[in-house]
Image 1 (cartoon, rainbow, N blue to C red):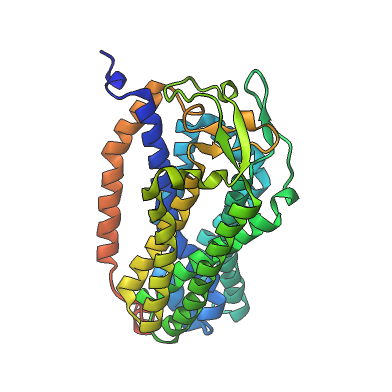
Image 2 (image 1 turned 180 degrees about the vertical axis):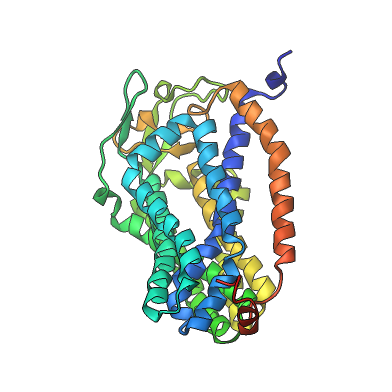
Length: 384
């Protein structure tokens, strides 16, 4: 027997849908607080020393955190080729903005403290702000557009054609999702600075974190109502064959109001996801107000997990619906790689993902503790 036949094709597809969610959540939970700190930098830290404290809370870990982004992109490329082809080509300008903003971060980390000129350092501080704010906003805008359907279609030869433009992505609902994404990561960054920073940096970060947590609760609720009343969801009409070949055009799809809530009625346990989104943000708000550092950061993580999971569970089995040809919509069952490819990737993941988790946990254990002004002064040659 061939090894990959030990696991059913449909089981592998579902497993990789879950793993893709894990990778994206891992990126948001880890690199998310880096982006949140960058967004907060001009507001929570007002002197050069305060900004150095904020920067040095994330400088030792941001590179490792960004590995999750690379893993997520690689997983999409290998496990869901049609998804990679349509999303990365259709959202080309948006992807370029994200990558350009993320490229600013390492440059700013390396060059900021090379000169003592205030204008020089201020320029790189704003570069760090852009590197945090722009990806957070654009990622949220992208999710908002996915929920509404993306303007692409597939030909009979399964060639994809994207018929939208960049400015079409900036619609009201997508911008609301973008603001929710920014608020979520600012809350997460505020919780991180409350945990790792000292003095006025931590105090101001808690204040902005509380405002962001309130915004998360309000925007998440508003987004849910908007999806219920104003955003049509997608539903498969034809019979679903989980082990079907990767040909999206073989199904029939209906566009219906409230369809994105169907899964919650059929599987009540899925309500855990939006509940975590709200309760995590509420717990982070109360924790920031009461200066409970560790629990606040954990609640902030739970909120991030809940909000992202809500999107994935609402859309399942869709992963990229089409607004101009619903039949071309990509789902978990009809847009995956081959049986053997998914199996080989799973074997590699089972081996290496635990190693990444163990190493990451060890790094955070070694770097545990607060960053103080004295630490910066004592480490002039190595501190950022």
